[in-house]
Amino acid sequence: MRARRFLTTMVATSALFPLVAGCGDTGTSGTTGASGTASVTCPGGKVRFGIEPYEDPAKLKPAYEVLAAALQRKLNCPVELKIVEDYSAEVLAMRNGQLEMAQFGPLGFVFASQLADTQAVASFADATGALTTYTGGIWVPTDSPITSIKDLALSSPASTSGDALPRYALKTEGIAESALQIDYAGGHPEALLALVNDKVDAAEINSQQLATSQAAGTFDPSKYRQIWKSEPIPNDPITVYGKLDQKFRDAVAKALLELDTADVTKVGAFLDVNPPGPLVAVTKDTYKPLFDLATALNLTEKDA
Image (cartoon, rainbow, N blue to C red):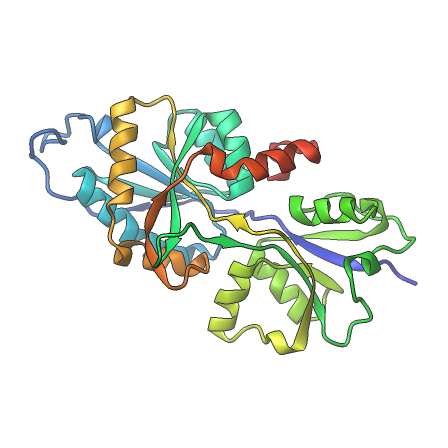
């Protein structure tokens, strides 16, 4: 019998998309003037904001332009939005002082905090003001003989890499990764398409991707079953580079937390934030379960 093919998601794209939001008003006391002179809220004359391509960049661009434009008005400083090539490029850019701000996935933040001194300041909340979460899941077709994560493991050896949460689930069930043929997708949408197109026996698809795909009519949950679900994961943090002046970091945190719900609703839709609310404050401690997970699995930045 052939090994079950299990598809995990590793986000990686081949292009770099620098996106620049329009400039806001200048010349106000305490902000950047027309000459571009740096200030507390505008170091170097602009703020560079990095985003991982966790969805098609063409779809992410208009949503993040709304957020960036609102942040720009709060800081009275041009905000240059950069959808970077991948997580590693985002960490490297921040470590090299080429980004003042960045949004990371929760596990990515674990390593970004260690490698690039990133500090979590805000994340996405619902209409009640509660920090939102999402879940990882493993899905199979409804008529699949697979009924639990244990059924994924057969005798044929294969690849030994995958996403952290499914790997942890396998470890918890006593399943060796070498018992599966684990393939990589180009991202969450690609993993879902592989399952829908019958290219794999099972796929790791998180609740955020499921929500956007159902809304777009590209996934019919009645045709599939979820055989594993992770514990809730706190939503993506927006971070600031820790080596920057404390006054600037405080100003960014204040500006983010003062954004209107409408400013973050489009981005929140990609993160299954429904109904949306304003951003809320988060810290490194918010993501402690992810730090613990990385330690338990001996993960490195290559696993993010």
